[in-house]
Length: 216
Image (cartoon, rainbow, N blue to C red):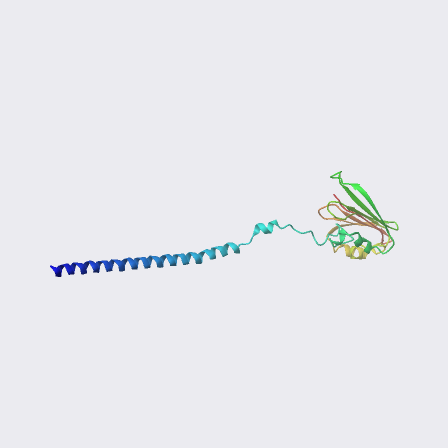
């Protein structure tokens, strides 16, 4: 009887030990799987974030405003090509090689009557350059130039006194429409705002230049 009781205890103890070992193995395996899964998720998450960060921010690029042009087309300003210089009266003074005077006259803004703009008029001899300065923008826009002497040269050194063949050669370097008669050569805009540059001829040479720009 005692012997059977002892066998029963051993059998129960053996089953308990086996159950504990089985539970331990299951727990270890589950822990390893969860650890591997967590590691895989950690590896994949930064990769996904990196992919998102690598995509260009097109919205940011669209938000950035385009800067002003650095140069002006020929008929926009036949005297000065640099956009920044064209906003300074001193740049025009530097191009005039003779004595000149300057007048500043207030003028009502055509779009907003409550705003007063300025017309600057530069005179040297019989020549006149007229600049319109809107007070709100800080621009200095060339609207009229009537040049009757060699006191100022246009871009590419076009000026009063030059020969007709040389003038034609220089004009062909610009994107303009050229009309020619015996008494004058006219350069006009191919497209865009209307503007014209007239070279009046006498004895095959330029004796007057008149520019009419477009100011809105």
